[in-house]
Amino acid sequence: MLGMIMDITERRELEERLIRTEELFRTASQNTRLNMWEFDIRNKRIVQTKESQVVHGEDMIIENVPESLIEGGYFHPDYIDAVRSFYEKLGNGNSVTTITAKVKSQKKGEQYWWEKTTYTIVREDEGKPVWAIGMSEDVTTQKEAEIRVFEEERMREMLSEDMICGFRMNLSKNYLGKMWNYAEKREETELLGKGYEEIYNRILDTIANEDNKKRFCSQYSLDKLQEMEPNKEKGGDFEFRQKQKNGVIMWVALNVRVIISPETREYFLFGYLKNINSTKQRELSLKPKAEIDEVSGFYNFATAKLLIEDIIESSEKESCVLVLMDVDNFKEINQNGGFFAGDTLLRAISNELSKSIPFSSIKARVNGDMFLLFCYGLKGQTDIREKMEKVREHISRAYSIDGEIFEITVSAGMSMSFTEGMTYEQIYQCASHALNMAKREGKNRLLMYRDVEKVETGMDIELVVDSESCEIIDMNTTGQIAFGIKGVTNSGMKCHELLYNNAKPCSFCYKKMALNEKQAWRCFVARLNKSMYVQVLCQMRDGKKVKQISLKEKYSQK
Image (cartoon, rainbow, N blue to C red; front, side, top):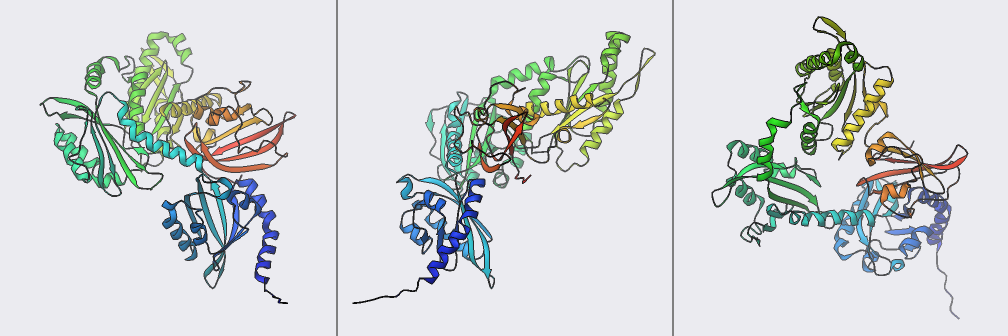
């Protein structure tokens, strides 16, 4: 008879530790939608929770990490080097380490999914990390959306009949991958594999105007492109007159965009030249005739809208501001002094506005007695609100019209772009809401949308949803402006329809929640094209169980 005694003390201690902490992990996982486990850094050992095992498969205790996972085919071959580097950084003491990689498990068969993994070191010994908490989240939906955007951008230039040429360049490796000549319906091969300088010089040589050449050199050098924010167009279109091979000079527009490949993380430059000659010629011919309001001498509302939209496309966040100013009680002035006196007064106010605005601006008469001021190029400026308040105070005074004195006051609403991607219409609606509140609060004042709606940073949307039907009961002003709707009461609109265009409730929404229970997660909101923090609180309202949903760009524990 043979007998064997094995010391399993260490393994037993690990299993007991798992039991003690599993409830904690389960609670955290339910509230954050994250899978969690422990990692013994010194011994390269993962200790899984039951929830983690359900998602990832594998044994409760996984030895020799990450090599055992790599050998077992858990990570996609393209990410093996990155995974090894990731765990090496963790072992070197990086307090928080994150990686997004393609993975698969026995649970999900041979199909890969995208997983974001984060380790946080929770214990050290003599300055060296020994224990970490691991968390992972399935980000496949978000990653696939990023890949679709990347692929759509590759084909974007092919969708326009006015396209002259387009190109795709790997900026990280500085070589031209593809170039299309749409005018001659063929692929250009002469410059393939060349660096950006070749493309830059070819475009520069065709620019007919010297001022445009200088502008191109200052904005489109390789250094400037490398400073571009990824996934954002560079200042809209660069319009210039271009010399063609046949000697003809015509108007064209250059558009470039830097995009990070979701799979390789390399930087790609997409660019195209578009024929805008007919549109530009028509624009130049109509410009003197139709864009000026006769009474104020400012742009009319429609023209101002077009000009402002162009500037917003090319401006940095918080570098512009829109102000709506409305003459208080102007109807009474028209009734008492007549329409002629009213128009004369508006001319006088317009003149004072022109003299008092301290920034580069577009001025327009919206309608009647309302004026629009759009100030831009404000980066580095301070006290913008105070300066606009001085403008309002300057025009709120006595005016003499044909010997009659008119004492007027002006109310104003002001809005700045407080989140990336805000459109002209959204900024305008915010300013309009602030103006309406200024009127309600007694007139003769300027209010900022941020102050009225308590917007701190980024987009904060609040919804109240029926817990059973998912119908939206109420929504704050920021949400209505962001989604382009007015009024949601009794509309029958459901939250999953509005946020994600889904006919059915979202799979990650915790439909059955206890009263005062709160859930939180981060996800990609399709209708806003943003990744946002979502918080759900179950409450009673008017005798009905509802969910109060908050969508925030910045995380808040409130």
